[in-house]
Length: 90
Image (cartoon, rainbow, N blue to C red):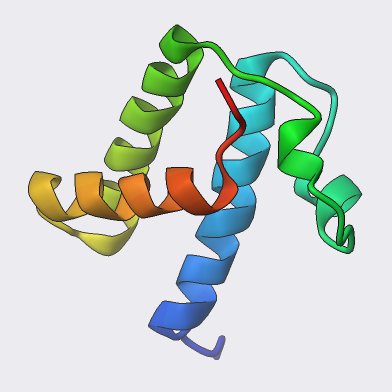
């Protein structure tokens, strides 16, 4: 029988997925694996438009609601924190 993932393990998987989706929406051929060990300011090397950021945010909110069963309000807050921590500059 497979072990159930903890909430933190689910969130760690989600963070990888959300970062990969951000690069995909922004049109870059970069993944989480490419940036995970970098200690420089990698997030300033690429940019994202407001439209792309909004698309990414909408995707993220729906994914959070689906995976974690958060209300829309909480999902938007969570995605806002993700954008602050890992989002590309505009």
